[in-house]
Image (tube, rainbow, N blue to C red):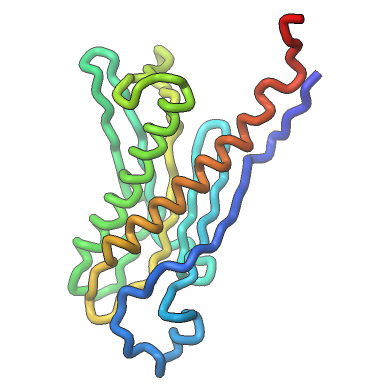
Length: 196
């Protein structure tokens, strides 16, 4: 008899991302929240049976925008389609001069995380990166939807997030997912008898 928990696997990690603003922020209120010109970024992962939830926040625990990405795999043409949509909020301050860019950045961030999760899932299934895992006849695939809360600190002066910060954030979120996946699946063989 194996008892499993109905609670989701949950992990939390805080990383320091480089502040993409100019180095003139030492005299403002935000400087107290930054250490050595970095921004504390908290990543929360919860793995549910039918969803993956990630919250990435630089806003003292505030969730920010809520986005969802569904993955559809077609065994007919061997393709993978990623559908990203914003469920709540844009994460953009009213009157922002680069609102479209900020919304697009959030969608690209979520898609990039899901693409990496798909590759990891295929690797753990023992198949090649381009191999479609397929799904049930009801359209439910092996990769559950990813729900992401993004509470990113607005940059000063309309500057864009650096490529380094973007990649570091995505890398940390995917690494946390991989750790959570391993924890969640570690008990899969508990209670099974060997061939002897």
